[in-house]
Image 1 (spheres, rainbow, N blue to C red):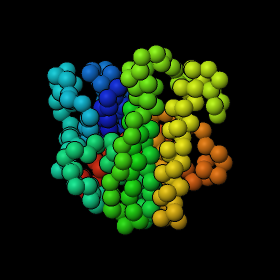
Image 2: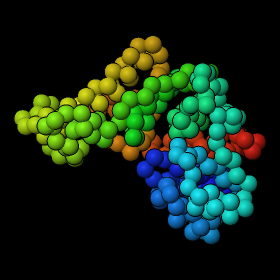
Image 3: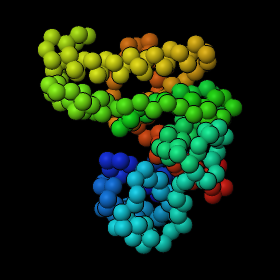
Length: 243
């Protein structure tokens, strides 16, 4: 069984896979993997992959070292099951490449647009030949709300949850509508532009934030919250000769 340790900006996710099937997933602090040992006791872990976008704390390093299990720490030199055309792989976030690998593992030989709606919104493209061409990074939902408050003198910091229409009828709803509808239109614009170039394009949406789309758009979007975990699992298996 594989243990996937995905350490993000806000929290950590850990998942257990048997081949390509996810058996369990937990979230915990990214400074102390407090649920690591219960997972190790529950499952017979044979190999581990660790991917982090933040420096590992001394406690996390100690916890991982005590596992005494073959471990792959993902970095820019880790072999991948796809061709990476990114010109600066050393600056490429592991979550971006893992999401692409995850989508490609589900639909190989397809042109794919992968949208990850997390702290930032990322847009990634991998073609039907398994070539990752790169992507774009945009401010995420919460970042946009906070920026309006931080960089202005009077605009309040508005919560994402709450009522809003197409146009706001108060400052609070104007901000909420502006941020949420603006982000939806941004996503729809990427999808439309890419589908003009690649008629058979498939779209994956992952990450913590949810958006509303009309039925026509929903039909071309595959929502998968665990795309990064699935990608990390595939990378681990690939490096151990299992796929």
